[in-house]
Image (cartoon, rainbow, N blue to C red; front, side):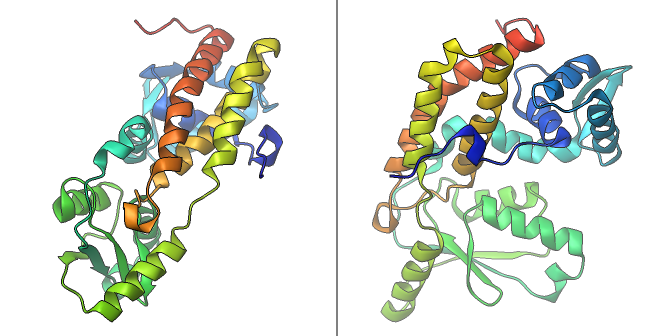
Length: 272
């Protein structure tokens, strides 16, 4: 049985800490002092946090409201919306009727490196996998179908020239091949180990120093939310979502601990 702990997971850098606090935090704005103190929980010096703030402002992921006060910038908003919606991801799933969403990519999408990188990220977040060269697929089992998926890909910065359509009534051989390849590419992450790690830390966190609780909840919670929002919502015939449902349920409880720890550590008021 796999075990996951704080030390097993990547530790966030200064920019990741800033983005985490502004992208999915309850407070719409945050001060330099708060961000500096957040970095201190990870041993990051004030100069490192201030440098991260400046760089995030430069690329549009952070905006300055007034001197020393910041909020999410427009470039951070698409991912921010996805992060803040982690509790409701399973609600997007509908019964699968066997249809597929198919996207074809080519030179038009690959010309600009930044656009292509964003397109690949969008495919990943929307649960697509490359079944054949330049052919990306996922089951059409989410509310809104092709139109909603097309809008989501665009919101995440995918190439505007991207072709996306629903396909059905494939021949038995091709359908079986797609099912096999997509199932293999989208095998379950070990959600069980992460769910256990969240529960174990939630139960013992009252005995730890406040800064340690805050830092640990950010790292473990960040990993849980990363996996939740990247889950492709497997149809029952291709793996199902039972393990994901358990992870989301535990993360709801764990998030209460994390939010309380960060509010206390940063001396922020509770949200009414």
